[in-house]
Amino acid sequence: MASLVDMYAEQVACGSLQADAAQQAILPVLDDIRRHLEQATPRRRGVLGGLFHAPKDVPQGLYLWGGVGRGKSMLMDLFVASVDIKQKRRVHFHAFMQEVHAGLHKARKDGHDDALAPVAAALSKDLRLLAFDEMQINDITDAMIVGRLFEKLFQAGVVVITTSNRPPNDLYKDGLNRALFLPFIDFLNGEMNVHELVSPKDYRQQRLAASQVYFTPDDGDARAGMDKVWEKLAGGSGAPLVLNVNSRQVILPEFRNGVARARFRDLCGQPLGPADFLAIADAVRVLMLDNIPCLSRSNFNEAKRFVTLIDALYEARVGLVASAAAQPEVLYLEGDGAFEFERTASRLREMQAADWGVA
Image (cartoon, rainbow, N blue to C red; front, side):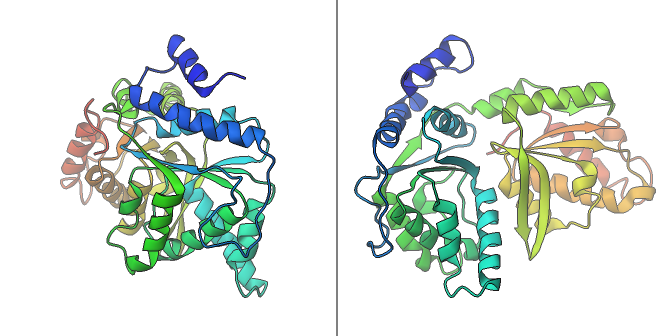
């Protein structure tokens, strides 16, 4: 079977990828992990193993970090697709933690003294490769869970590959009781291959800059244009992303590779507030928002939420792709708040610029 180096070269030759020395430098590391997974006979280690140490026949995982749009998710997808084993899984870190929290809730209801034990056992059953995309720790609860969870996964012989925008030392930076999280950071640095993807190019921003990002009027052509941008940025079908914010759930109907897609009514037609929109801005790198209507006193609450959403995206420099009933300057012409909306219209114009994007 062809190596990842060869597969990458083929995609460059056919124009699907641009040759990038930083990306190419990671390929041999991934190829080594792939060969081990395909050739080794998996053996499990019991729960009496030492803290944060994997079985000797399990290769080191990979923690790949770097700036937004450098190709981390692309490399992970290429790697996971190439590994010729069935016991593999690729999942976004947010979605994975949602699954973990749901499992913990059930385990507690079932009366387990250690609720994490059955969750980890279920997650690692018949699994040899687990690939996380966009690992980040923003919550004290997740910080306390993730270290023990990784310990159990490694004891079960699962190889973990993860991408992140931050180096291990910056995870949960300045977080509450962060000292309790430091042993896990030491584990990541000591037990995993930590590589920075140092490409100077932001490929996602290049793709976004080359695309139309504001479609009006909101008709069939706009829908087709939005679909085309989704395919270019996300590269396939998405799955729902559920964000837990202050004991409630915020749902983005489609999410893949840092790109989320929702309708105006999914976000602004719901009783969401600043904390919810800040969580969205933190979780995604590009938001595609369909079906923005004309705004007036008849939908004043939705208009207020839209202003708050745009402010959150703007401050976080999240990319925005939208379909709307009208150009920004004429979206909101009458009713309370119409004058204040001029700032939002200005921001919507600025976010259409070719050089707009995440910091």
